Image (cartoon, rainbow, N blue to C red; front, side):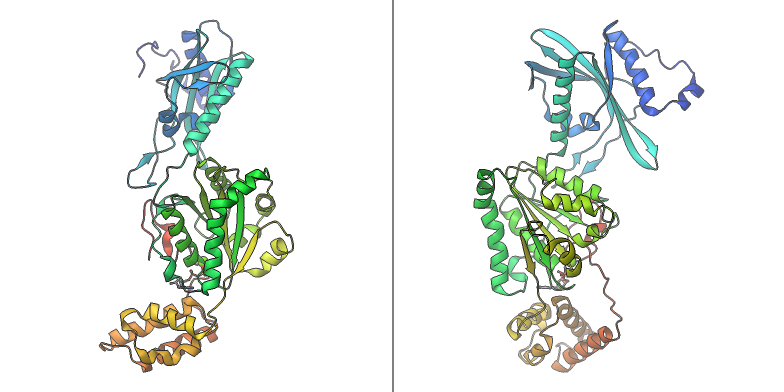
Length: 451
Ligand SMILES: Nc1ncnc2c1ncn2[C@@H]1O[C@H](COP(=O)(O)OP(=O)(O)O)[C@@H](O)[C@H]1O
Ligand SMILES: [Mg+2]
């Protein structure tokens, strides 16, 4: 707290009058009194300010001594005591250590320009408008060059507050923005080898060589891949495995789902794109269930992003991998408009007995027996999710009957039971699976992803 700032003269008990004023008016009124004390008679401008100026991370990253435009140096900030500001911080868990995030407060920011000192009074506080909102104001000297300096300082704060630390975890953009560690290994994804190699090759080629090529052509290095296929074929699983590979290559991974509690809002995509732009590392951006966004009013904005009008410009490269179960939405909005996505990759149901055998082995685990091979042909044309369920159900049935092994009979029974359930149209699986294979997105900050 500042010792130099004299006690405030603002709280004179005129409460009713204050209650009719808007929060930003209160802040400006308070700030102008501070201004008079610090800079008597000096004209000022009151501005809407960026709340990120008060962000903890921005304030700790922009150090005193930092040079700004016009031979200006930032000299540091002094905390002010403002009765309308109750500082409350949020925290995020990008890795193992929590990071303090948005916060409000009041400060006197000090600058020097060729020997001359000047300052800015900034205050931000919470107000209630259905949602929790932050309002921020700044009082700056009424001079054009000072406005340019302040604009520069705000830009730095915006960048610093969005900056992502490189992490071994995937960032989730959504209601409870947290992070998780993907646990799916590349070889656990059972799909045709050529398809997997192609997708992995595309990602590597883009980050390693593609980014430079895009830049030579003066294009923002932003590549867009779309995974299309029926529910349960492994799109989410594939994304999780790609995420794990990308993290191992020291790339940042950002995950957005249209199917979480927050729904599919452009605000979410917008936030994700900002994060991608400021990341300073190559970013893999995963947007699941992209069709949901394309059905809503926000679709024009999403299409703008795909069309490149609002592409993130991350010089290290950004690869968008989007998924959808609904090819018809894609046909209309995307496939017939070349350039909206660079590649559409179809994720098929099980193609042949080899793949079916691998899938069954994977989900039978230690209970796998050679004669299970007999059912493999029945699994062609089914999805990975189907095989997982019949395997799990068979294993449970056997355990329930206190049998130590899963007989072929039990396995057949399990297939029959799920097939007839699906035939009646009564599918117990949720229509939209969320997250990397489960209720992941609903979990709290820092939750581990399910395996
Ligand atoms: N190709 C696959 N390889 C391995 N497991 C799969 C595959 N497809 C589906 N699964 C299993 O089924 C579950 C649901 O699949 P998911 O990846 O969510 O499908 P989608 O996103 O295409 O709807 C997964 O958690 C995984 O256990
Ligand atoms: Mg999915």
